[in-house]
Image (cartoon, rainbow, N blue to C red; front, top):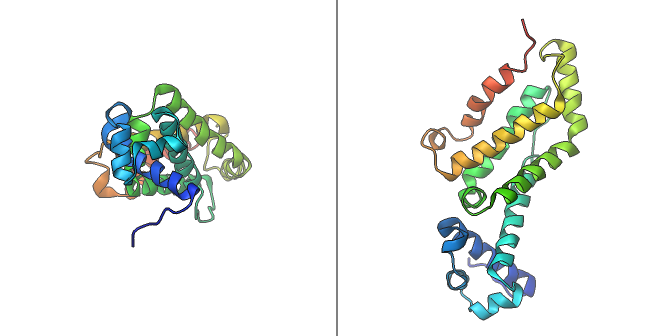
Length: 202
């Protein structure tokens, strides 16, 4: 069934969705407002009623992509008994979402400036900060149980997690041959050396 866009809010969303596909396929410079209008089935003039410039539309797409990726991290996350299980589940959630939404991955990589990529990183870091108490609690339990190095810095560990999140976005955007066939299992493969590095030193 075709989606209906009767109200102003729905029309705006229709434009954003069409722009997301265009920017993912052609990058910011390659996608014209005419391309987006054609994809949305509306006129260029209709787009300019909602967005004064192509850049303003791009920012709206970027913000929606960021919000979707970041909000997905803790979506339907099962309870974790330890830090390693939490980190693995987060990475699986992230990779599953990226595999299901390749256009979003391409937008992050191909159409976003270095400054905007930093913003994406900061958004993920902010989400991890919201869960800092849970993360640190699981890490502390691991230290007490002897499964994690007592010298670990939770802030640094969270930073490394963010870098892995971004790395997975790049791999998905470029349709990495190694990644795609393995699906979300690739997340566990990538996490193993990281989690092993958190173990107590001999």
